[in-house]
Every structure is written in structure tokens, then in C-alpha cells.
Length: 350
Image (cartoon, rainbow, N blue to C red; front, side):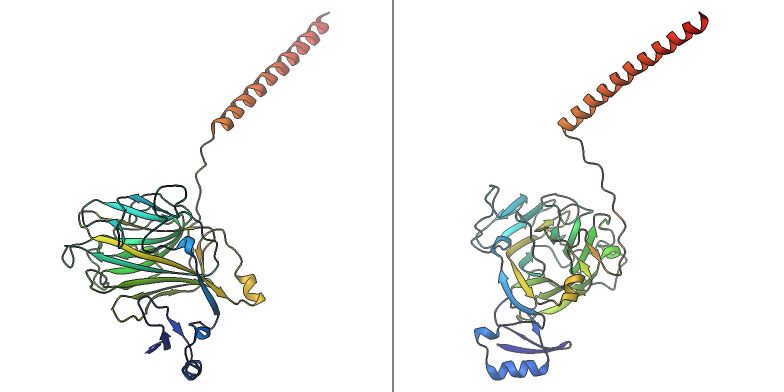
């Protein structure tokens, strides 16, 4: 076990690529070092007791369960293809679009998604694009302009953006990782690289590297944390940390990519989802009840108006039928009333 001291306090990790980061105070760290590192003393945060790999939401070599059949756990879309060592969302070619979506909705309250990826291509430093996205959304398999998936999505999007569209910006260095939560009312602003709606972000030099690159999305007690391991040191560094993020359960995980005039290979090597078992007090249980629309505390999202769903054939037939019945009934009533009125008029004259 290696120990790392960071600006945010003591941190230890298990050796190996993609190891999970854990923080603790000096006393807890000293106690762990004195007692050893047996299996019963695995990494655990103060409010985290255990973790479980959820295979129905995970993907790794040799990529079994990927395809188009109803029994597949993962579905490919567009130009995405399965290779022996990775799943390529888009090749290093112009105007390509691909995606990979989990078929099984996720009902976990607290989870962590580890993404092992690689971005590489022939383009020079600033002549490559466009990046890829990781999704936790209500809808799946819907292509669109936001890194290969639909705009005005409902859920969470994490973007690894490799090309700056906003020419005047200077303070931001690309590639850049950002996150966005939407209830369906927000549109991703490509011209400004998503700035108006992002929760936070960080620079991430992830192209054409000879070592493994990882990204972790953690959602625990309504707190969204994103960390990176891209320097080849097997150490996580913080990127985004936002409290008060409310994500409904039952959404789908996916990842997508798109290329335009510029291109790159966007490869997914593995996706591993862990269920995190977290202890909650009764007060916390009340505060962390299920939500029905994504939202972020202290961030007002515009109210969304859902268009009316088109009527089915049966519903349309019933509406027309009962409308005709009502019209005939009204006509009959009208005729009866008119006849009675005529009879009364004749009686007045006689």
C-alpha cells in the first residue's frame, strides 16, 4: 500500500491502475499502518462501509454481452465497434458518431463509475476533436449533437472535450473535463464549450499518452465528485466536487463520441460500476429521499414543459367514436326540443 500526502490531507491508495482514492485523518492513517493492510482493512471513507462491483452495469475485456440482441447488457450505436482490446466509439476519421449504452436501468442510491479510456490520433496539438461524453440519463440510444447524443437530456453528462470552440477564451486549457446536470430544459452551448451550464471542470491532458488514463465519477449522499488518474502515477487528482446534486434512480449509463472536421480515436477499455454502501442517520434518510427530476441545490434550472405524446390508434378511434355519439345524441335532443317548441307554438294560435 502506498501513502500519498496531498493538499487536501492524507490520502492512501491501493497499488495498480485505477485504484480508488481514500482520505482520512492522520490518526486513522497511523492506526492503519500499525495494524497492517489485511483484507478487512480495505479502503473506506468515513461514511462508506463497503463496495460491490455491479456486473450488469460494468464492461471489460473480452467484452461479452455487447451487441444488438435482447440478451445483451450493452448496445452499440452508430460507428462504434468492438475490438479485442477496446471498444472504439469513433475512429480517427471525419464526421463519425458512435455510442455505447447499458440496457439495464440503475437503481443504486450511491455509486462510483470508473472509466478506463484512451484518446489518440494523428492530429496535432490543436487539430483534433471532438471528445467524448459519459452519461447517466433518463433516455438512451438517442443520437444528437452533444458528443454524439441528444441535447436537452435529462440527467448527468460528463464531457471530455478535446477541442476549444470558443476562440476568444484564453484562461481555459484544452482538453477539458466538465459536468452538467439537466432536467431537459437546458441546451448544451457548443459555441461556448458548455460554459453557461457547467457545474465545474478542469484541464486534462489526455491525448496520445503511452500510459493508462482513468476517470472516476462518484455519487454519494447527493455529492458529485469527479477525479482523474492521467499522469501515469496511479494517483487520483480532484477535478469536480459539487454537493447538493439530486439524481433520480432508474436512469441509464452510456458513453458517446462524435468527430467533425477534426477527429481522434475515442476508445473505451473498461467501465466498472460499484455500489457504495453508506451509513445514514434517520435525519439523513429524510433528506435523501428519492427525487423525480435532476436538480442541483442553489442552482435554479428552468422548468421543463413536456410536449404532449402522440395518441395511439385505439385512443384516436375512441375519441372520434364518442365524439360522433355525443354529436348524434345532441342532434336528437335538439330535434325533440324543437318539435316540442313547435307544438307549444301551435297551441297558442288555437
